[in-house]
View 1 (cartoon, rainbow, N blue to C red):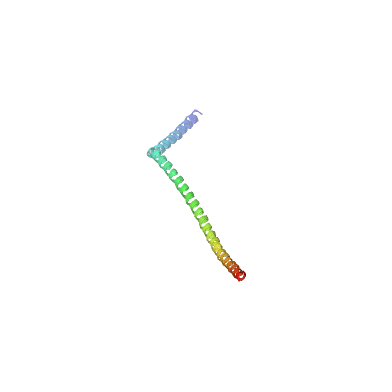
View 2: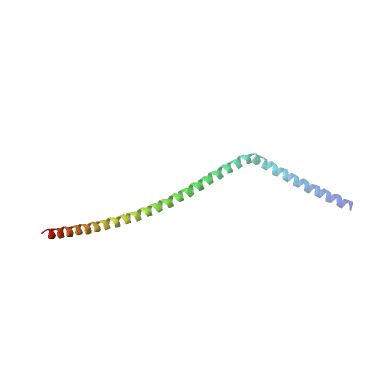
Length: 112
């Protein structure tokens, strides 16, 4: 029984030693990388800010494009309305000229 306990203890010690050795090797591999982490974090923060600015710029461009489309549509509507007003003004001018001609003719008839 005592031998089983000794054997079990030696197996557990060997297993523990193996795990410690694996952890040590892992730490040795990650040690050079760990020294670059602050720089990497700073780069990520800078990139995050750049991405936020790019997103804001993209939103601004979308807003400007929408505004430009609205202005273009408004200008087309205004051009159509201007054409209608010009046509109506020509018709009204023709009517007014006709009315003046009629009044002039009546005045001449009354003057005779």
